[in-house]
Length: 202
Picture (cartoon, helix red, strand yellow):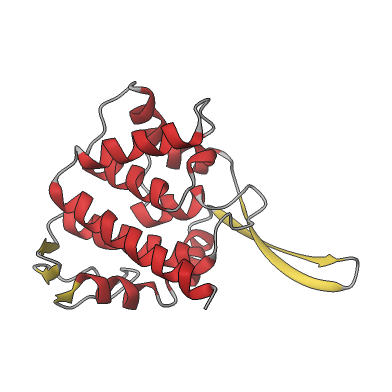
């Protein structure tokens, strides 16, 4: 069983083995924030209704974000600020990622955060693959990850032999069959990611 938090699983799926991000960082940060809120909602720490979140149990001291009652859209946008870096550092601290410094063209230094073991990302995506292929019924957490993978268009990272549109459709079907809070929060992330993408071209 994979013991990583939902947002860390999403981070791993959203990078290649060399540590290169596969999507724009602003979109990824919104997805990570949505994943944090989804996990809190599924564990009973947050109640979501009519676009508002009520914190019933404050996140633990080592939680990646601090939350207060309020509009879900605003909470996700606020939580996204700096969450990408905090998630990466947490994965480095736990030994899942390794910091590697190199030089581009022999001169320009750069740092990548590579997988210490490919098994980490295999575990991160295994539940989603099992759900899509019908090997194992998805629980709510898996359905949430399916929805976020679809929203962020990371379906190619599942390495399933299906056309992209069909695969995204199946991921969305799994999400829609989950408890309503999953679909509601995934839909908010979808909207925010779309708005962020449009903003890049303004």
